[in-house]
Amino acid sequence: MKLRQLLSLCEYTVLCGELDIDIADVIYDSRKVTKGCAFVCLKGFNVDGHKFIPDALEKGATALVVEDDVTAPQGITVIKVKNTRVALAKMSVEYFSHPADELKTIAITGTKGKTTTVAMIRSILEKAGIKTATIGTLGIVIDNQIYKTNNTTPESYEIQQAMRKMVNEGCKAMVIEASSLGLKWHRTDGIVFDYGVFTNFSNDHIGEAEHKNMEEYLYCKSLLFKQCKVGLINCDDDNFKNVIKDHTCEVETYGFSPDADIVAHDDTLIARPGYIGVHFDTTGEKELSVDVAIPGRFSVYNALAAISVCRHFDLTDKDILDGLNEVKVKGRVEAVPVVGDYTILIDYAHNALSMENILTTLKEYKPTRLVTMFGAGGDRPKVRRYEMGEVSGRLSDLSVITEDNSRFEDVMDIIEDIKVGIHKTDGEYVVIPNRVDAIRYCIENAQKGDIIVLAGKGHEDYQEIRGVKYHMDEREIIADIFDSLS
Image (cartoon, rainbow, N blue to C red; front, side):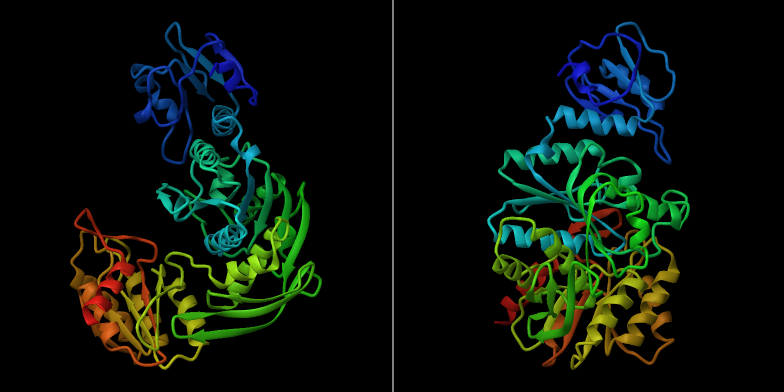
């Protein structure tokens, strides 16, 4: 593609060189530079791409896109822009021939619930025969193929590349988690989403490398509603008016509030062996009686968001109901098949706050026992281990302490730290250092009506020990244990 065409969506100044040159690719990582590419110099918190210009030129880059004034050898084109991240996004749109124009695009922002809401929307749309791909915490998911990404919201080039692949593979819709940092760093620029969703807002991601304060964090969330056509907003959240301040989209609302466009009411808990979820009814723009296969009141909000989006598609109420009743989110209170009258859930909870949230939610289901199997990550602050031990000891009927990603620490040292927290409570516990053995213990000692939570790994399919990642998928382990017991 000619450089002039690649830059057609950008405002720029030509510092030197020609625009009518062929560009083989658009690259922002100097380690991946190829001959004839345009190298875009991104400025991040820790790294400034301008420092790698000599490397990029040595590897054959023929054009540079910069924010700073730089010098370059003869025959190299240098393009100056105000913001190279914005330029990368717009160049990527052009390079991959505007794939968003060929998809229905949905973006989800909020502190919690993004991954689950994405899964719910995909489940509903797929029930309706609308092939849907997703981008988020789990990676890029097309069909059942998962492509790992470095960030919840990948860099703009990866987003555009993924959408082109989605189109090529017959997808009609795409759902993406639009994180606050993704919005802040312009990774979703160049897309006008058909639908934008706001789930909720709470304290998170404040720090030197993230957001300087809560005001900036909220502002970055609000950016989505300046780049979508329709905004679907949780109007029960205290910050909803601020998140749609200066919005340019149509706004629809959902929540328990009677003022919402879609109103939830009469929510009740559902529990039976192998299934744990919530029921609720809706009135307003959509009248439904809904069962959701994910526990807790928060699941009502995520389901409302999914309903609010999907009602705009050509599908039936049955598609919505079946999609929500059968939805699974890998590693998020994920129920797995068992032989017996109890429930096993796999969850990513790996700190005290996330553990407290899930265990408090599950106690509302009044299980015979709430059994929590967990470890703690190595090379991480010890205080996390104390806190996790204390939370599990306080809320679980039995804690099964085991290994997680021990990294370069000794498993038994980590377990001793966890016990410090547990000993602050009167909670019962057992120590089983090997995680596979710990899972087997939970299964062999399960009682009727138990809820067993395998916490910490979630969607991960590996265990990291001494710098090596070994394959470990808890779903496979559980299936193998049942095979050995049959």
